[in-house]
Image (cartoon, rainbow, N blue to C red; front, side, top):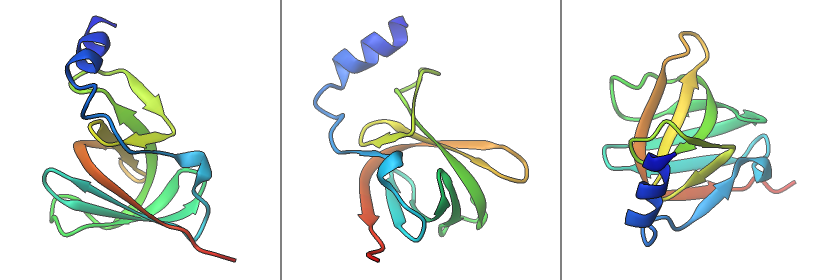
Length: 112
């Protein structure tokens, strides 16, 4: 808990835009820009999405978006993405979670 409190105090100005995953619907697209790459999630249902990105070590695959962690802490804010936090998701086939710092979040809502 100390890690979480220290992180929040040190980065209060960095934690900005956020997205609640409960607002995202099938057919929507999320683009999450991190320090190292852009991740594009085509939402299938709930928190499940097809991931595409340009990095060879992040294969195109079905993933489950878990939420965001706070800095180096293992504390997670489930079902939320926010700038300054670390994106956490798991590949459906191997379950390996990948975490990177979020710089921007873009949401394209599929109007019906």
